[in-house]
Picture 1: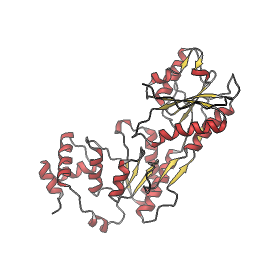
Picture 2: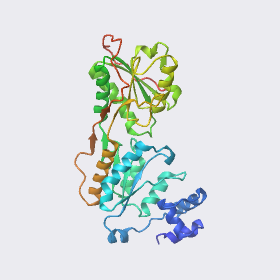
Picture 3: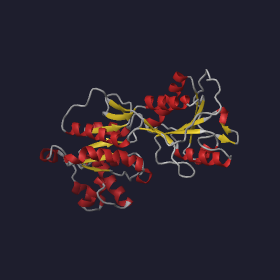
Picture 4: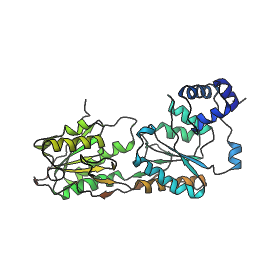
Length: 353
């Protein structure tokens, strides 16, 4: 006989309503309570019967936007996506929530949340290569849409940044200003990182090859010191005259170090960021940025999910690509020293030790 919510409550020593709060995130609960409930869910293989709810309401009224990261690391850039999802779904009476995975086994907690029947669909953020969350959602047959790309064959549909276009636009912008050697200050990537980080570095090298520009890619930690290491009294390392970066902390370190060496942006070096709107220069000035309209991307994802909830088949194109646009804040300028374009492309540098 299948376990019930009451069974889980008895095994965990809590009330049935507390089980609901833990599984849905509707109220804050103690970590020890959450662990007991999640242990009982696993041991009893609790799987709520959502058929009755589905019959009563063919379009469940709550959608979750799921981040891989903790709530404390979610910034206003991320919330732009959420606002876009709300714009698409709330006119249809669908509430959008941001569940927070708090246990030591987030995938198990997510599965329990899905099985609780509290979500009618999911928009998945921070998507990684071969994302385990996507696989689980497909197994549970919950309608899901990605913001990003996992590379999973037959996976969920989604929307993603056109990284090839973004990289080409970044290198082309700097090359048009006479910059022929560029250092790319990129976040280090790991196997579970957002696919976006890996795509950005790869596409920058491809664009550089196409445009005859040298791009030296440095994958560095998200630390200010990492940015300060690429600039000295004579300017940027290895004769570079401009920086492309998706690493906000390193950009801050770069700006501070440049100032300490008597250099200024953009007179002595140009800085162009890739989608890091929240981060600014030493005195609060914004860096020029290539990024997508995050709210528009969220709206596109929400509209795609709404269609899936209504039973409309997913489009034949697995991911819709959103182009990046340049917001010029004056941190790039014409290169004062314009050497002949280099004929060879620098290889991707090894990650810092």
